[in-house]
Amino acid sequence: MGSHLDWRDVRHYDRTGDRPCRWCGRPTPLRDDHRRPSHKVCAEANAANDNGGPLPPRTGAAANPAQNWRHPA
Image (cartoon, rainbow, N blue to C red; front, side, top):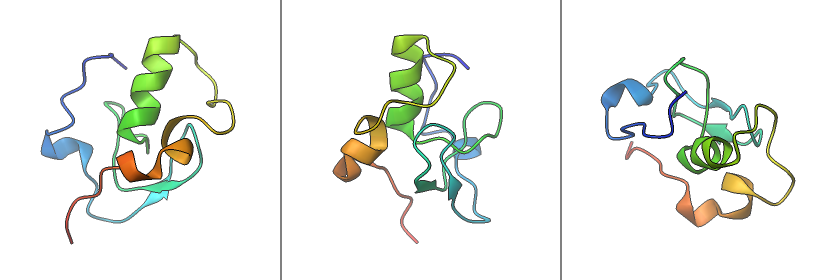
């Protein structure tokens, strides 16, 4: 997964529903380049940290719920 994803691309949104983010476990309709559930902030934090595992507690989308992007229903 690259650190320069274009999150505006409709392919990053899954209309079938929310799934647990692979990094923080919170629900998200967003998908990374490999179609795995991932919040934008979680994926970018992982890319910045070059870390293949889950984010530490109280980081990423779990720490910043106001930053979670949700497609208008």
